[in-house]
Every structure is written in C-alpha cells, then in structure tokens.
Amino acid sequence: MRAHDPSSPSPASRGRARAFGLAVGELPTGPHNALTDVPGVRVGHTTLIRPPEVHSGVTAIVPDGVGPGSPLPAGVFAGNGYGKLIGATQIAELGALETPVLLTSTLSAFRVADALVGWILERPGNADVHSVNPVVGECNDGLLSDIRSRPVREEHVRAALDEASRGPVAEGCVGGGTGLTALGFKAGIGTSSRRLPLAGQEITLGVLVQANFGGTLRVRGRTVTPADVGLPLAAPAPEAGSCMVVAATDAPLDARQLTRLARRGVYALARVGAGYGHGSGDYGLAFGTRPLGTPAGPAAVRDEDLDLLFTAALDAVEEAVLNALLTATTTTGPRGDTRHELPAAPLLALLG
Image 1 (cartoon, rainbow, N blue to C red):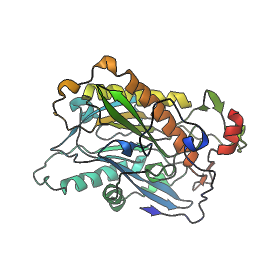
Image 2 (image 1 turned 90 degrees about the vertical axis):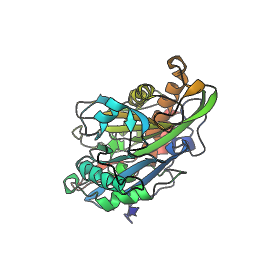
Image 3 (image 1 turned 180 degrees about the vertical axis):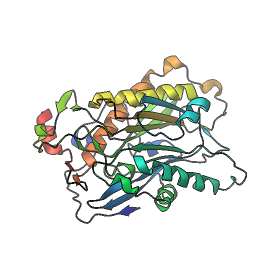
Image 4 (image 1 turned 120 degrees about the vertical axis):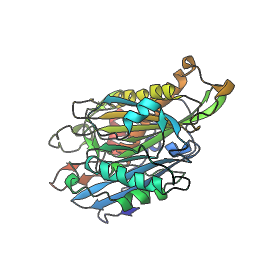
C-alpha cells in the first residue's frame, strides 16, 4: 500500500546494482535476488508520502506459519545498541522468533508493535495465547520526515502484513526505508540473496537491509562522496540513524549458529563504509525457516562448514545496501533538508 507523491521522480537511471554491472561476489543469486527467494518468506510494504512533511512507512517480513505456538529458530546481534529492537532480549534468551519482523520509523515502533500483537492474537489457533513477543526494528527518519507525528498507524501495519507476498521486493524509498539516508545519499530498503551448497544440499540465504547509517560510501574499494559524483554538499546531520539487517535461510541451523550469521550481517556494513557511530544502532537478526525443534538429523551443519554461508551473508548485505542506494530517489524533508539519490552514470564513470 502506498500513498503516492505524484511529483516524485522515477528516472530511468534508477536500478539495482546488477543492472549496472555491480554484482558482489561469485555465488549465484536466487531467481529474484531477494529475501523472498528463501522458501516460505514474504515481504510487504506500506509507504506513506505526504511531501514535504511525511516520508515514512513500515515493512513486514512474514515467514509462513510463524506464531507463538510455532516459533522459528533465530539469533540476534547488536553491533551498537543505540536503537529500539523490540523483542530482542527474548530472541537472545530463547533463540526463538514467534512473530513476523516489522521495520519502521523510531517513534512509530511502539504503535507498530502494538498493532502486530493485535494481528497475531487474531490469527487462527491463537485464541488461548496470553503472551507474545513482537519483533520490531526501527531507523530514525527524522531528517526527511516529521518523525514526531508518528504517522504509521495500525491500518498501515495490517496492510503490510496482509499484503506481504513472494516474488520481487520493492526497494529504495518504500516502507520502512522511505525517509532514510545512508553514507551521505538517499537510501532505504535493499535486498539480495545467494544460493550455495551446505551440509550436502543446496540452500538459500536472503537478506533485507533497512539502510540508515553514517560513514563514507565504498564501492569496489573506492570511496565515493556526493561531491565525487557531482552532487551538492549537504549540511551534515546528527548521526541518529540505525541499520537493521534481517537474514533468512532454509539451512538447518540452530539458534546459536543463526546468531553467528546475524553478526556477519552487521560486519558486512563495513564493506560499504559504515562508520558505526555513537548514535547509529546497528542490528543483525537471522532466522531459519525450519520450525524450532525440527530434528536436524544427518543434515545438521557443523560450525566448521559455515564459512561459505558467512561469505554469502557478507556479499548479499553489501549488494543489498548498493541496491538501496541505487533504487532510492532524491527526497526533501519538512525543514528543507535534501538527500540526493546515488546517480549510476557518474558512479560508473568514477569506478572506470
């Protein structure tokens, strides 16, 4: 669901990293190069744009069948804990995810969590549920949106959950990424996936990044500032960002191994130049699609066999951030602050 800004540009120069020859790593992607390539995972967005005051929204990551009575194994990692990852302590304690994962704006996170609880309690089979651990991550979109208005409401949350789908995932200025900035440019939602052999079977890893962090962009080892690609210098904003990296896999991992995977999601941000500043909450969350308690049997993965999966996570997160930057469009906020899209042609010229 999208409240559309008719004046918002949609230039033909916007596209994903691979469209411009900027693939990351050697491993193949899934069919959509998205989190939804992991079987049983859907994504939905509600996008709220009322320029110049509001550029915000909510993104829902919905694993099939997840609920209080059918949790999935999960792990969480806080690279820098200056943020509001609602539900994180129970995941860390129990290694279990029992709701979809929602991503939104900082001051809307609590309304979103309440709406998620209501949605879960209404699901079939949950009539006797008396406790639920909603999982909601957030980024601060206060530079480009009126964050104090807390524009994300229950109906927006329910729309994102109910309309979540498989297939291609919208990126850039959508859902929880609508008002975000990263590395000096307009950013937002980005996603990517990898296929690889693990424990004698082919598995899929998918990631989705809510990109909103400081630092200096690096592409193929080269630093890229707005001035390098012909953009005007913008007044620096206080680093009150955060970044949420969500990974999903159909590999038979336990919660401890998924926590290790979540760490790699945060580590990967360094590849694109993340500054990991004081005010940036940098979080990784990883979950498996095999229900908690499913016997792993002979397919259980040894820790020493995780290296290729870790490589896949690093590559996928790097590419997801590039996708967020290359699909986002220039946005001006309520106080006249502007963050420009990363222009593909000057970037490619710079990289040679």
